Length: 360
Image 1 (cartoon, one colour):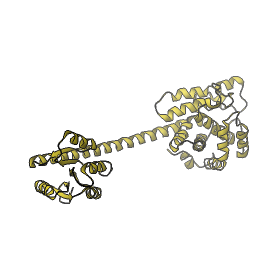
Image 2 (cartoon, one colour; image 1 turned 45 degrees about the horizontal axis):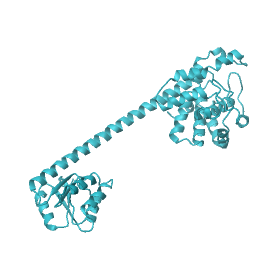
Image 3 (cartoon, one colour; image 1 turned 60 degrees about the horizontal axis):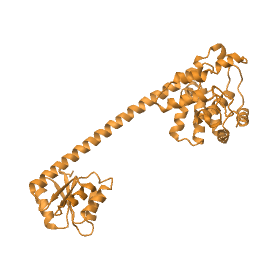
Image 4 (cartoon, rainbow, N blue to C red; image 1 turned 90 degrees about the horizontal axis):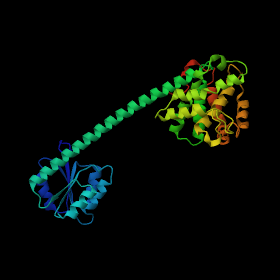
């Protein structure tokens, strides 16, 4: 659109008489730009894209077909409607033009009413297309914003549900915060994309949700559990998987795998199914390390907190038995970051820090 408010047309033809004819037909209603060769037409279209191009086919050097091909291959100009104006009226010529992306064909010598009608029609179609594209972009943006808000709500709920279970045997509820951050750290180290590691962090919050179904006199028992009591404890992965249920959301699918598999062991001596090695989902193998390490280093009803050095030593000794040895190596190599997370989200942190443990 020109400064005068008129649509801008680019007329491309190597013959001055043809240009004068089209200028005479269209000049009163449109702002006209002129190019007498293909390269100049491409330059004008790239610098100040017109609303429509009237393009001659038979020009020396770069013909109209090549001009059309390059315009349609350029993201900045591909949307511009192109009408071929040519003396070549063979079916094959028209077919080639349409295949290259032309909007229409006008045969020389031109008829003024036909030229005006075709130009008006294709400008109207172009305007309608732009309107629809803008509408789609606006609606798509609105849907994306709504989806983000919904996802954020789901993640906050995951965090709070995880904390509800964690508060059963951990007074601060900070265990899931540290496990989430350890899991994300180990996920990134093992090759997860940032988005996957972020999802793992949130999914890990639900690893012990099944503890909701364990009686307090067993869960909070300060002494050693009997075999019968431990059998009850071993039910919490299955309870957790049932609580999470079946969902299409990837984070919940991952949470279910973690809840069910984080007590499996690399050597097959874990529970509930006795899976071993890589039969255990990698997300569960990651959370197993994060969960045990943090459980060792914090106070529980049945134990005092271990020093970080002693906990790291146990993780290292358990490689190939309890834990995936490759993941253990990655965890140990990230010791500095592990220590930072343990310190930053310690149980003695302030309440305001606790509320910000995992970003919502």
